[in-house]
Image (tube, rainbow, N blue to C red):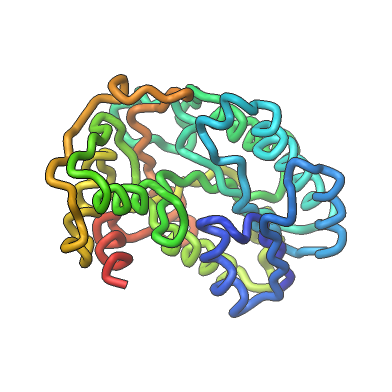
Length: 291
């Protein structure tokens, strides 16, 4: 199987390289491939001639998207449409990562795939437009919404909290945003496993299964809960100087982009279709920190 992996230098893309390479011929396109350059993207697709495209690339700077909406839409929507068109025209399959930020965060239960969307910032709106483009094309695409992806290797919420715990005696962390923390390696392994099981039928299988699915760490918590757990579970706690972790409200930490408050995802559809679920978020955190 020939796979084109876009975003190969990102949190999930980096973790996808190894698992995908165990059963496929992988072309890994990282920072040198600018999804905002749609002509260059077409050339990359033509050169790689993939049977499956895995799009782990995105404009993910939530606050930056407010300053650069044009670029956010080119990468998160227009480039995604190019991928969908190419896949449909060439009999390929597409796995595209999306986000919980397509929701407005006002639902009192976990979001299902068919719940109404309503993004509250440019990033979320641009990602939703990418989803809609694939739907309008009836592209052979698995749209996988995930949430709160974190890494220890790259800059993420968890790595930032661990760094700040070594620098500041007091941390103020938002305690009214709720979501599913997702360890990038667990997400990557799950996606690779699904493709491995599909085997050479992957393009056809992706067309048959096309649509939107949720896949994120099992269980939900607040940002404050995640920060406190990471700091408590860090095996290098002796290096910490932090003494207090103070819970605050979102409005006490103003940022350029609004954030949805509650975006817990119901991932039962993915499990029912593919037999795969991610581990509980706290278990994943403990495992990652233990090395």
